[in-house]
Length: 251
Image (cartoon, rainbow, N blue to C red):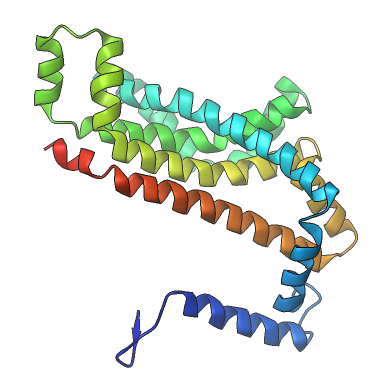
């Protein structure tokens, strides 16, 4: 980014907004907006605590299980839609509908069907993550050059061999992009699940902080979640860029 011909690092934007936040907080503009420095200090204070660690473990377990299920189910469904016209026409409207629907409204339905335990939180996480994974895997398979498919047929490859050795590897850039976006949506899904289904993990901390108007604690927890999602997105983004040569090999 350049300003008046001077190259400014992207981090400068975050620093600028942090300074504005600090000024607004010091002026007591609103009780909902404490000083930025106080939020950072509160974050350093609560992260090492046993309460935070236990909440993180519960949230991480739901996140990993939900995201793992979404990946294991989403990639094969996306590959199937990319290779089968019939499956694509049958499933694509539903995938698009769930991707654009307000999924939070479906959580009470899951609660009625599966109760108020961890199972429902995990299913909520799956519900948020799986659709973008399906669509990206489908897009990747549709971009595969037909010669690769013809080669698999000429060597009489089974459906499983074609799936594991042709479709997944050739569509890998899009699949990784879908997993990256799915992980970001999983963070949202697991927190919503913990708030609405069963007040555990970070959901319990949010409930505790909001009930007692501990806004510094609330923002500190939100910042941690933002940073957690950012690290996941950037880490998978690096992995995605390392596999970009697969995309070039398809054409």
